[in-house]
Each structure stands twice: as C-alpha cells, then as structure tokens.
Amino acid sequence: MILIPAMDILDGEVVRLYKGDYGQKTVYSGDPISVASAFAAAGVERLHLVDLSGARDGQPQSLAIFSEIKNQNDLSIEAGGGIRSREQAAAYIDAGVDYLMIGTLPVKNPDEFKAIVELAGASRILLTVDVLGREVRVSGWMEGTSLHISDFMESMVEMGIGQFLVTQIEKDGTLQGPDFALYGELMRKFPGIFLIASGGVSSVDDLYDLREQGLSGAIIGKAFYENKISLADIAAFA
Image (cartoon, rainbow, N blue to C red):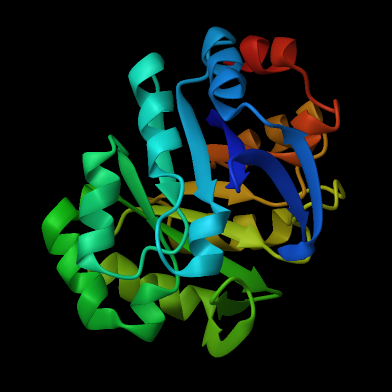
C-alpha cells in the first residue's frame, strides 16, 4: 500500500477544509512547492493535489503550481478539482499530471466523461467517489444523487475504470479514523481494483489497518498537517 499525501491548493496556499466547507479552512503553508519537495525527500512516490480554487470557480486555477511540482520532483501526481470538460482534462495532462481525478462528471455529464476517458485512457483516470454514508455525493459534496456507491462503482468498472479514491465525507478532516467498514465492503465486492482510502486517517496504526484490508493506497491529509503522522513515519512506511 502506498501513502499519498494530500495537498489542497486554494489561492496558492496549502490548506485543509473541514468537511469540504470553504468557510472552515486552515492554512498550513504559502509555499506548496516546498511542501511537495519535503514529501519527495521523505520517499513519497505519489502526491494528491486538489485545485480547490478550480473546483470553486469551475476553471483550473492551480495548473502552474502542479507543473512546477512535477518539474522539480520525481513524483507521480494525481490531480483534480473542477475538471468539467475534455479541454480542461487536456490542460491537466499538458501540466504533467499523471492521473486525472474526476468525480462529478460521470454523474452530471457522462458523455463528456467518456470523451475524457477516450482522451487520457482509462488507466489514467482516478475516479473520486465521495459518499455520505453509502450515497454518492457530487458538486463538492453539495448534491445528493440517490446512487449507492456499490452500484455506481460497478458501472464504472464495466467502463474499464480501475482506480478509485473513495472519501467518506463523515470522516474527512475529523481525525476520527477511516470508515473501515465501507472499505471492507468495497474490497470484498471489487477485489481487483486499485482502491485508495480517504478521510479520517489519524495515525500510523490506521494506515497499517487499511493495508491489512488490502487497500492499494491511503490519503494522508490533516493527520500530517496536525503532526499526528510525521515525515519520518511516512519514510518508514514507504
């Protein structure tokens, strides 16, 4: 299992939101390039970059930062935030992004999503599935869909999508531990997928427990920025 530190970029700063609320943000750094370099030096192989400004405004806003991170470090980058069209996806690819994080589009505009899959290839799509309980939520968690996560993921697997990042909204930013029950259900139903856990990781013990469940990756966010998990912990796990 790989550890994937999260860097949420809002107006050029590294921040964390509480349960996705732009009104409840904590700023951790004004220099995302340096933060990314520190992760690379600790042995991190892959970064999770979110353009919160782009998600808010509907147009990519942080691609220059993503490109600079990629140019300065030997890292794979998974990135997203407001990808709504084939053209925007192409801009992410041009910026050096390895995996396109897409969540809302398959629900709101499946034809455009198919166009992006054709452009990038299914292997470069990281489908971000945000759930409240077991219901899929879209548009920055603001809209319900009545879709059960298992049914939605099954339809995506049938399209050839193999990488999924599943965030339990109830856990995100809370440091209360991941939703182990949810990930256990998904691993039993979809044993062949590359599944990344997101939301609630609070300690190194959580990471080992997720690995025991057979997950392929885990996002580290607030636990790092609040000094619950250190760069030394990350290096040791890596």
